[in-house]
Image (cartoon, rainbow, N blue to C red; front, side):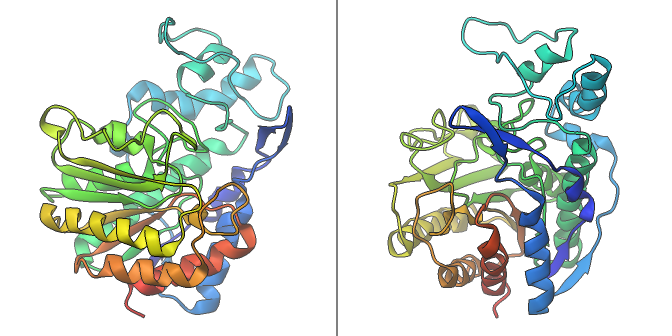
Length: 343
């Protein structure tokens, strides 16, 4: 297992999120990645290497030019507007009855390019966001060139980010960028398996009309959980993408025995698609002790989950997504990666 990692994620810090009518430190914090890399090092799990630097055209294969430029410049523009808050966030969001226009003030564009207020911009955000995408791209190159498994230890995460909207702690869609990069490098098809507790609405929307990327997601029923407005079982894809999006919304309280049945069915769908490699959007927020979620998966279950995915017999690119039980996220990641690597 080769792990790609950068300490630049620590620049994306001091995030605040709304809770109970006031702001508190965000659960998407630097300690998440710090604890994962420490656990991997303690476990002696594979090689560690830093990311290469990629041209921004890799990003705009998935996201719009305008959105990438917005992310790159948002903090500078926030300061130039005389805003004093440490977190740049939207006041107004585009929804039904409003137009998605590019306004001149940064306050307007923060709502133009976001679907919720959980993805604020701070002073170091762009460097961390950009490096997170580079990590995913580097890991994708490793899988493509060596046919070995790789782990992209990305922070911030990405699977909620759509073509030109941030949200759910996500800015650039690392899993989608990695999948597209593998296609551009010569693969004719790629599967993305999302095992985060929350539906990867961004990944689904990016590939929803395509048949070269199979998107499969196991997640909490959006009738009960974020992101609420996407991730239902009656979303099969559109146009030539019809039949290439499969969702498994699961009830609150789902534990490993029931989750594994859904995973087995999802893996059968992927086998029929017969991709040469798979991108796994690894959310460790399915953990029973996660402070944000309501599933019942234990640390030992992640080992079995990894082994089940390994049974596909193809290279696995694992991209870190959610997981907010900071004290447990490292050992959960190690268990999953050991399963994927056959340990």
